[in-house]
Length: 273
Ligand SMILES: [Zn+2]
Image (cartoon, rainbow, N blue to C red; front, side, top):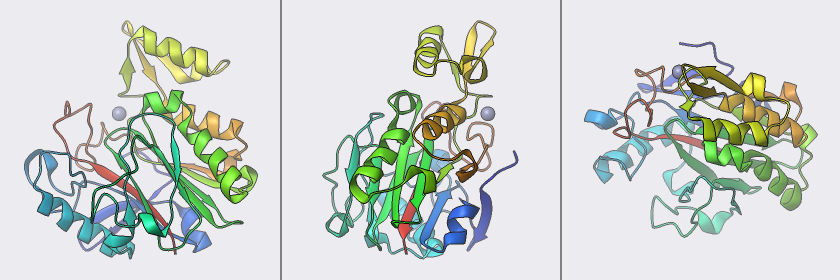
C-alpha cells in the first residue's frame, strides 16, 4: 500500500480512512470508506455503499448501518445528491437529511455539497473519482466534492471553496482540505484529446500533470486538484493528500476502471459534530 497522508482506521471489521488535521479540530466526524467489512458479495464484496450497483438494497442499507455506526453518525442524518461529473454546488441544511437514504433525493446533478449546520452529514460516492474534503474551522463550515476528470477540469473543487466563501464567509487561507483515495497517475490513462484539455486547463503544469506513455497519457488528478485549490487560496500545507490509488489496491478499494464498471461504490462522509 502506498504511503498515505490519511490515517487507516479499523473498527468492527471495517477499514476506513481519516484526515489527521480534520480529526485534530474535533469539529467533524468524517471518513472515506474501503471495500472491507460489509455484507455484500460478488463484485460488490463487501462494503458496497452504492444503491445503483449490482447489489441488493438491503445489503447497501446494512453496509451503511455499519459504516455510520463506526463514524458515530446516524443514517438518517445523511444527504445524498445524484452526481453528474459537473460543477454544481448545493447548500445543504437540516431539511435535506435523509435524502437519498430514507427517501428519494431531489438534489440532482450536483457534485459539490456544503453546509454550516451541525448534524447534517454530506455524502459523495466514488470508485476512482477524487473525493475532496473541506473544513473551515473558523466559521465552522464543511464541504465535500466528487471530482472525476471531468469535474476536475470543471474545477468543482475550487467552486466548492468559492461557494463556502460566498455562503459562510470561509477564508480559503484558513481552510483545511483533503484529497482522498482515488485513481492515481499510475493507472489513469487517457488519449490525447483529454490530455490536451488538461494542458489547456492548467497552463504551466503540463510537465508534472501529464506523463506520456506508449502513445497514451497518464494524468495526475491529485495534483490537478491540489493546483486548483492552491489557486483558490488554500494553503499547500493545509492540504492532505491520501496518495492511495483505488485501481492499484484491489484488496482495499473498488475501482470502476480496473473492474470495468463491475464494482461497488465507496463513500466519503463528513458531518459537523
Ligand atoms: Zn494505480
